[in-house]
Image (cartoon, rainbow, N blue to C red; front, side, top):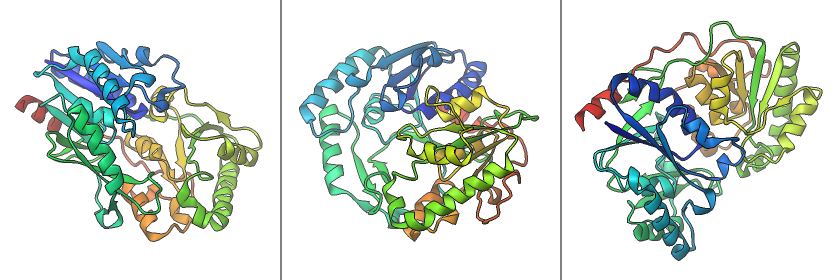
Length: 368
Protein backbone atom coordinates (compact mmCIF):
# COMPACT_ATOMS: atom_id res chain seq x y z
CA UNK A 1 0.00 0.00 0.00
CA UNK A 2 1.20 3.50 -0.85
CA UNK A 3 0.44 6.66 1.08
CA UNK A 4 1.30 10.16 -0.09
CA UNK A 5 1.19 12.81 2.61
CA UNK A 6 1.05 16.46 1.65
CA UNK A 7 2.88 18.88 3.94
CA UNK A 8 1.91 22.46 3.27
CA UNK A 9 2.22 23.95 6.74
CA UNK A 10 4.50 23.36 9.75
CA UNK A 11 1.49 21.99 11.68
CA UNK A 12 1.26 19.14 9.16
CA UNK A 13 4.72 17.90 10.12
CA UNK A 14 3.78 17.33 13.75
CA UNK A 15 0.43 15.82 12.78
CA UNK A 16 1.91 13.26 10.38
CA UNK A 17 4.81 12.55 12.73
CA UNK A 18 2.16 11.36 15.22
CA UNK A 19 -0.05 9.63 12.64
CA UNK A 20 2.44 7.69 10.50
CA UNK A 21 3.51 5.16 13.16
CA UNK A 22 -0.12 4.01 13.37
CA UNK A 23 -0.26 3.57 9.59
CA UNK A 24 2.90 1.47 9.67
CA UNK A 25 1.58 -0.69 12.50
CA UNK A 26 -1.58 -1.52 10.57
CA UNK A 27 -0.43 -1.59 6.93
CA UNK A 28 2.57 -2.83 5.01
CA UNK A 29 3.06 0.54 3.37
CA UNK A 30 5.41 3.03 1.80
CA UNK A 31 4.97 6.67 2.77
CA UNK A 32 6.01 9.45 0.42
CA UNK A 33 5.89 13.04 1.62
CA UNK A 34 5.34 15.97 -0.73
CA UNK A 35 6.50 19.34 0.58
CA UNK A 36 5.84 22.61 -1.20
CA UNK A 37 8.08 24.99 0.70
CA UNK A 38 6.42 28.26 1.71
CA UNK A 39 7.73 31.09 3.86
CA UNK A 40 6.47 29.29 7.01
CA UNK A 41 9.39 26.86 6.66
CA UNK A 42 12.16 29.43 6.24
CA UNK A 43 13.74 29.01 9.68
CA UNK A 44 13.58 25.21 9.86
CA UNK A 45 17.12 23.87 10.30
CA UNK A 46 16.72 20.68 8.26
CA UNK A 47 13.21 20.23 6.97
CA UNK A 48 13.88 17.07 4.95
CA UNK A 49 15.61 15.31 7.85
CA UNK A 50 12.61 15.99 10.09
CA UNK A 51 10.17 14.64 7.50
CA UNK A 52 12.30 11.55 6.83
CA UNK A 53 11.97 10.65 10.51
CA UNK A 54 8.45 9.39 9.68
CA UNK A 55 8.34 9.10 5.86
CA UNK A 56 10.27 6.78 3.54
CA UNK A 57 10.79 9.41 0.87
CA UNK A 58 10.37 13.16 0.61
CA UNK A 59 9.97 15.18 -2.58
CA UNK A 60 10.57 18.86 -1.92
CA UNK A 61 9.65 21.76 -4.17
CA UNK A 62 11.84 24.74 -3.18
CA UNK A 63 10.08 27.96 -2.20
CA UNK A 64 11.06 29.77 -5.40
CA UNK A 65 9.56 26.89 -7.43
CA UNK A 66 6.40 26.31 -5.39
CA UNK A 67 3.36 27.59 -7.33
CA UNK A 68 0.72 29.56 -5.47
CA UNK A 69 -2.29 31.69 -6.28
CA UNK A 70 -0.90 34.61 -8.28
CA UNK A 71 -1.86 37.35 -10.72
CA UNK A 72 1.14 36.31 -12.82
CA UNK A 73 -0.83 33.55 -14.46
CA UNK A 74 1.68 32.52 -17.13
CA UNK A 75 4.59 32.41 -14.68
CA UNK A 76 2.51 30.32 -12.29
CA UNK A 77 1.51 27.99 -15.12
CA UNK A 78 5.16 27.19 -15.88
CA UNK A 79 5.92 26.76 -12.17
CA UNK A 80 3.02 24.34 -11.90
CA UNK A 81 4.16 22.33 -14.90
CA UNK A 82 7.69 22.07 -13.51
CA UNK A 83 6.39 21.04 -10.06
CA UNK A 84 4.16 18.35 -11.58
CA UNK A 85 7.12 16.92 -13.48
CA UNK A 86 9.16 16.72 -10.29
CA UNK A 87 6.27 15.13 -8.39
CA UNK A 88 5.26 12.71 -11.15
CA UNK A 89 6.72 9.67 -9.37
CA UNK A 90 4.34 10.29 -6.45
CA UNK A 91 1.25 10.64 -8.66
CA UNK A 92 0.32 6.97 -8.48
CA UNK A 93 -3.35 6.24 -9.22
CA UNK A 94 -3.34 3.52 -6.55
CA UNK A 95 -1.80 5.74 -3.87
CA UNK A 96 -3.88 7.31 -1.10
CA UNK A 97 -3.35 11.01 -0.51
CA UNK A 98 -3.54 12.25 3.09
CA UNK A 99 -3.71 16.02 3.51
CA UNK A 100 -4.68 18.59 6.11
CA UNK A 101 -5.03 21.54 3.73
CA UNK A 102 -7.49 22.47 0.98
CA UNK A 103 -6.98 26.24 0.75
CA UNK A 104 -3.53 26.70 -0.82
CA UNK A 105 -3.07 26.43 -4.58
CA UNK A 106 -0.28 23.87 -4.24
CA UNK A 107 -2.41 21.56 -2.08
CA UNK A 108 -5.34 21.87 -4.49
CA UNK A 109 -3.06 21.14 -7.44
CA UNK A 110 -1.63 18.04 -5.71
CA UNK A 111 -5.08 16.79 -4.66
CA UNK A 112 -6.30 17.06 -8.25
CA UNK A 113 -3.83 14.32 -9.22
CA UNK A 114 -5.42 11.72 -6.92
CA UNK A 115 -8.75 9.90 -6.74
CA UNK A 116 -8.27 8.46 -3.24
CA UNK A 117 -8.06 11.36 -0.81
CA UNK A 118 -8.53 11.78 2.93
CA UNK A 119 -8.70 15.38 4.14
CA UNK A 120 -8.18 16.11 7.84
CA UNK A 121 -9.89 19.24 9.16
CA UNK A 122 -10.58 20.95 12.46
CA UNK A 123 -14.22 20.60 13.52
CA UNK A 124 -16.58 23.56 13.13
CA UNK A 125 -19.63 23.37 15.34
CA UNK A 126 -20.88 26.82 14.42
CA UNK A 127 -22.43 28.00 11.16
CA UNK A 128 -20.53 31.15 10.25
CA UNK A 129 -21.48 31.37 6.58
CA UNK A 130 -23.62 34.43 7.28
CA UNK A 131 -20.48 36.31 8.40
CA UNK A 132 -18.64 35.73 5.13
CA UNK A 133 -19.11 37.17 1.68
CA UNK A 134 -18.13 35.65 -1.64
CA UNK A 135 -15.11 37.47 -3.04
CA UNK A 136 -15.67 37.62 -6.80
CA UNK A 137 -12.22 39.11 -7.32
CA UNK A 138 -10.27 36.44 -5.38
CA UNK A 139 -12.45 33.67 -6.80
CA UNK A 140 -11.75 34.85 -10.36
CA UNK A 141 -7.99 34.99 -9.71
CA UNK A 142 -8.02 31.50 -8.26
CA UNK A 143 -10.30 30.21 -11.01
CA UNK A 144 -7.75 31.28 -13.64
CA UNK A 145 -4.87 29.65 -11.74
CA UNK A 146 -6.79 26.41 -11.23
CA UNK A 147 -8.00 26.32 -14.83
CA UNK A 148 -4.45 26.62 -16.18
CA UNK A 149 -3.25 23.96 -13.71
CA UNK A 150 -6.08 21.52 -14.37
CA UNK A 151 -6.97 21.73 -10.68
CA UNK A 152 -10.36 21.73 -9.00
CA UNK A 153 -12.09 25.08 -8.79
CA UNK A 154 -12.77 26.86 -5.53
CA UNK A 155 -14.93 29.66 -4.16
CA UNK A 156 -13.39 32.18 -1.75
CA UNK A 157 -15.43 33.70 1.05
CA UNK A 158 -13.93 36.48 3.17
CA UNK A 159 -14.78 38.36 6.33
CA UNK A 160 -15.38 42.09 5.61
CA UNK A 161 -13.08 43.17 8.46
CA UNK A 162 -10.45 40.50 8.03
CA UNK A 163 -8.52 42.11 5.15
CA UNK A 164 -7.98 38.68 3.65
CA UNK A 165 -6.73 37.07 6.87
CA UNK A 166 -10.11 35.53 7.69
CA UNK A 167 -11.36 33.45 4.79
CA UNK A 168 -13.02 30.20 3.87
CA UNK A 169 -12.17 28.13 0.79
CA UNK A 170 -14.84 25.84 -0.63
CA UNK A 171 -13.75 23.28 -3.20
CA UNK A 172 -16.26 22.63 -5.97
CA UNK A 173 -17.12 18.98 -6.63
CA UNK A 174 -14.62 17.65 -4.07
CA UNK A 175 -13.47 14.05 -4.20
CA UNK A 176 -12.04 13.84 -0.71
CA UNK A 177 -13.32 12.06 2.38
CA UNK A 178 -13.28 14.45 5.35
CA UNK A 179 -12.25 13.43 8.85
CA UNK A 180 -12.21 15.81 11.78
CA UNK A 181 -9.39 16.04 14.31
CA UNK A 182 -10.98 15.79 17.72
CA UNK A 183 -10.67 14.66 21.31
CA UNK A 184 -14.01 12.83 21.18
CA UNK A 185 -14.71 9.69 19.22
CA UNK A 186 -17.26 9.70 16.41
CA UNK A 187 -17.91 8.19 12.97
CA UNK A 188 -16.12 11.08 11.20
CA UNK A 189 -13.54 11.92 13.89
CA UNK A 190 -10.01 10.73 14.58
CA UNK A 191 -8.24 10.99 17.92
CA UNK A 192 -4.48 10.83 18.32
CA UNK A 193 -2.90 9.98 21.69
CA UNK A 194 -1.72 12.62 24.15
CA UNK A 195 1.82 13.88 23.73
CA UNK A 196 2.24 15.43 27.19
CA UNK A 197 3.64 13.56 30.19
CA UNK A 198 1.93 12.95 33.53
CA UNK A 199 4.52 14.75 35.67
CA UNK A 200 5.43 18.02 33.94
CA UNK A 201 8.27 20.35 34.87
CA UNK A 202 7.76 23.93 36.02
CA UNK A 203 7.54 25.33 32.51
CA UNK A 204 4.94 27.34 30.63
CA UNK A 205 4.87 28.43 27.00
CA UNK A 206 3.32 31.55 25.47
CA UNK A 207 2.35 31.45 21.79
CA UNK A 208 2.68 34.82 20.04
CA UNK A 209 -0.47 36.18 18.42
CA UNK A 210 0.67 39.35 16.58
CA UNK A 211 -1.82 41.46 18.54
CA UNK A 212 0.00 44.64 17.50
CA UNK A 213 -0.28 43.85 13.81
CA UNK A 214 -3.59 42.08 12.98
CA UNK A 215 -6.03 44.44 11.30
CA UNK A 216 -9.00 43.30 13.37
CA UNK A 217 -7.26 44.43 16.59
CA UNK A 218 -7.09 48.04 15.46
CA UNK A 219 -10.71 49.04 16.28
CA UNK A 220 -10.31 47.90 19.90
CA UNK A 221 -6.60 48.45 20.48
CA UNK A 222 -6.96 51.37 22.92
CA UNK A 223 -9.12 49.34 25.27
CA UNK A 224 -7.77 45.85 24.55
CA UNK A 225 -4.02 46.40 24.81
CA UNK A 226 -4.08 47.40 28.52
CA UNK A 227 -6.12 44.24 29.25
CA UNK A 228 -3.66 42.07 27.32
CA UNK A 229 -0.67 43.50 29.17
CA UNK A 230 -2.48 43.15 32.52
CA UNK A 231 -3.12 39.46 31.82
CA UNK A 232 0.56 38.92 31.11
CA UNK A 233 1.49 40.85 34.27
CA UNK A 234 -0.70 38.55 36.38
CA UNK A 235 0.70 35.55 34.53
CA UNK A 236 4.21 36.67 35.44
CA UNK A 237 3.23 36.99 39.11
CA UNK A 238 1.60 33.54 39.09
CA UNK A 239 4.53 31.76 37.44
CA UNK A 240 7.38 33.73 39.00
CA UNK A 241 9.36 30.52 39.70
CA UNK A 242 8.68 28.89 36.31
CA UNK A 243 10.70 28.86 33.13
CA UNK A 244 8.67 30.91 30.65
CA UNK A 245 9.12 29.99 26.99
CA UNK A 246 8.01 32.31 24.21
CA UNK A 247 7.13 30.85 20.80
CA UNK A 248 6.74 33.71 18.33
CA UNK A 249 4.21 33.77 15.53
CA UNK A 250 6.01 32.89 12.26
CA UNK A 251 5.29 36.37 10.88
CA UNK A 252 5.83 38.32 14.07
CA UNK A 253 8.11 41.35 13.82
CA UNK A 254 9.31 41.23 17.42
CA UNK A 255 7.20 44.09 18.78
CA UNK A 256 4.89 41.76 20.69
CA UNK A 257 7.78 39.82 22.21
CA UNK A 258 9.49 43.02 23.38
CA UNK A 259 6.37 44.24 25.17
CA UNK A 260 5.73 40.92 26.91
CA UNK A 261 9.40 40.35 27.72
CA UNK A 262 9.50 43.71 29.51
CA UNK A 263 6.62 42.54 31.74
CA UNK A 264 8.50 39.30 32.49
CA UNK A 265 11.60 41.33 33.44
CA UNK A 266 13.60 40.16 30.43
CA UNK A 267 13.32 36.48 31.41
CA UNK A 268 11.34 35.15 28.44
CA UNK A 269 13.13 32.37 26.59
CA UNK A 270 12.42 33.16 22.93
CA UNK A 271 12.88 29.85 21.10
CA UNK A 272 12.35 31.31 17.61
CA UNK A 273 10.87 29.42 14.66
CA UNK A 274 13.38 26.68 13.97
CA UNK A 275 10.57 24.33 14.98
CA UNK A 276 6.89 25.12 14.76
CA UNK A 277 4.74 25.12 17.90
CA UNK A 278 3.49 21.54 17.57
CA UNK A 279 6.94 20.05 16.91
CA UNK A 280 8.35 22.07 19.80
CA UNK A 281 5.70 20.59 22.09
CA UNK A 282 6.49 17.08 20.85
CA UNK A 283 10.12 17.64 21.83
CA UNK A 284 9.19 19.22 25.18
CA UNK A 285 6.36 17.06 26.59
CA UNK A 286 7.13 18.27 30.13
CA UNK A 287 5.59 21.74 29.60
CA UNK A 288 2.87 22.23 32.22
CA UNK A 289 0.75 25.05 30.75
CA UNK A 290 0.30 26.72 27.35
CA UNK A 291 -1.15 30.22 26.89
CA UNK A 292 -2.01 32.62 24.09
CA UNK A 293 -4.34 35.41 23.20
CA UNK A 294 -6.02 33.51 20.37
CA UNK A 295 -3.39 31.39 18.64
CA UNK A 296 -4.53 28.19 16.97
CA UNK A 297 -1.38 26.68 18.50
CA UNK A 298 -3.33 26.72 21.77
CA UNK A 299 -5.95 24.48 20.19
CA UNK A 300 -3.22 22.20 18.86
CA UNK A 301 -1.61 22.06 22.30
CA UNK A 302 -4.92 21.03 23.86
CA UNK A 303 -5.44 18.35 21.21
CA UNK A 304 -1.97 17.03 22.02
CA UNK A 305 -2.87 16.63 25.69
CA UNK A 306 -1.44 19.81 27.21
CA UNK A 307 -3.21 22.18 29.60
CA UNK A 308 -3.87 25.08 27.26
CA UNK A 309 -5.79 28.37 27.53
CA UNK A 310 -6.69 31.48 25.51
CA UNK A 311 -7.98 34.86 26.71
CA UNK A 312 -9.35 36.69 23.65
CA UNK A 313 -12.88 36.66 25.10
CA UNK A 314 -11.87 39.37 27.58
CA UNK A 315 -11.12 41.92 24.87
CA UNK A 316 -14.52 42.91 23.46
CA UNK A 317 -14.11 42.08 19.79
CA UNK A 318 -16.90 43.10 17.41
CA UNK A 319 -19.49 40.29 17.27
CA UNK A 320 -18.65 38.96 13.82
CA UNK A 321 -14.91 38.81 14.59
CA UNK A 322 -15.58 37.16 17.96
CA UNK A 323 -17.81 34.60 16.23
CA UNK A 324 -14.98 33.67 13.86
CA UNK A 325 -12.62 33.17 16.80
CA UNK A 326 -15.23 31.20 18.73
CA UNK A 327 -15.58 28.96 15.70
CA UNK A 328 -11.83 28.27 15.74
CA UNK A 329 -12.17 26.93 19.28
CA UNK A 330 -15.70 25.54 19.05
CA UNK A 331 -14.93 22.16 20.66
CA UNK A 332 -12.89 23.49 23.56
CA UNK A 333 -14.11 23.06 27.15
CA UNK A 334 -15.05 25.96 29.41
CA UNK A 335 -11.71 25.72 31.24
CA UNK A 336 -9.87 26.45 27.98
CA UNK A 337 -11.07 30.08 28.06
CA UNK A 338 -9.81 32.77 30.43
CA UNK A 339 -12.57 35.33 30.92
CA UNK A 340 -12.04 36.64 34.46
CA UNK A 341 -9.97 39.74 35.24
CA UNK A 342 -8.39 37.72 38.07
CA UNK A 343 -7.82 34.44 36.23
CA UNK A 344 -6.95 31.10 37.75
CA UNK A 345 -4.13 30.25 35.35
CA UNK A 346 -3.46 26.91 37.02
CA UNK A 347 -7.00 25.56 36.74
CA UNK A 348 -6.39 22.64 34.36
CA UNK A 349 -8.18 22.63 31.01
CA UNK A 350 -7.20 19.03 30.46
CA UNK A 351 -8.98 16.53 32.69
CA UNK A 352 -7.95 13.19 31.18
CA UNK A 353 -5.54 11.75 28.66
CA UNK A 354 -7.00 11.02 25.24
CA UNK A 355 -7.58 7.47 24.09
CA UNK A 356 -6.53 7.22 20.44
CA UNK A 357 -9.16 6.25 17.89
CA UNK A 358 -8.26 5.91 14.23
CA UNK A 359 -11.00 3.47 13.25
CA UNK A 360 -12.82 6.00 10.99
CA UNK A 361 -9.58 6.50 9.04
CA UNK A 362 -8.95 2.78 8.75
CA UNK A 363 -12.50 2.25 7.51
CA UNK A 364 -12.00 4.77 4.68
CA UNK A 365 -8.58 3.37 3.74
CA UNK A 366 -9.89 -0.19 3.68
CA UNK A 367 -12.78 0.87 1.42
CA UNK A 368 -10.50 2.19 -1.34
